Length: 232
Image (cartoon, rainbow, N blue to C red; front, side):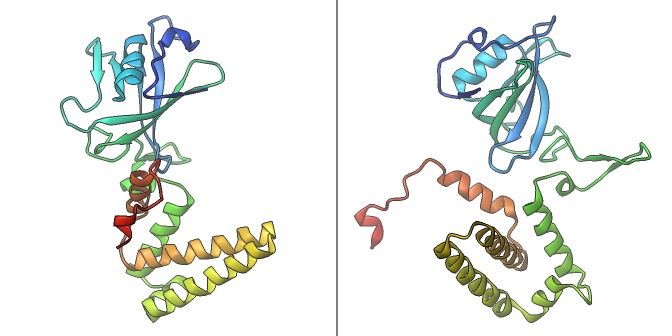
């Protein structure tokens, strides 16, 4: 189930299964790109304050008090939606972070990799962030910084923006043709090609995917219809 952050809903109406200490774990996810930012605990009051105010609140087990995330750092979490898992004992909070979520200054608390040997190795913050699109962007950056002889991306970077832009135009045309034919598998294939070459262009310009995601976040829920005075 999902609960909009501006709705007036009491926590005890949601069938949340609080533990014997009156707490429930809350996983916080960046609503723009799905990155897991942190995990903390909520009690009834914290959940109620989160739903009522739109700012994510937790219960501090060490200080034994209500905790508004960002109250000392100003790195608030703006609640977008709250989901309850199928067993009712875990919350997923989709939020917009107003700064780093981790007390270390990292974007996410999850930046330490555990290897098969059981050794924890701290990686760069980007290693744990995002999905395949972010991984592709990081690969493009690596190919730009450290060209490889037989790398397609390195060859595009070497030939410069004109070559990259030509590929984007070509792939955009292929998408148009595929959509007109309404061939599902072809559409998927061509859109993937277009997205890939767009990511190469972003890498060339040193524009991270998070900048695009943030821009989309600003536009979300806003009308795309321009007023007459805006068309001048």
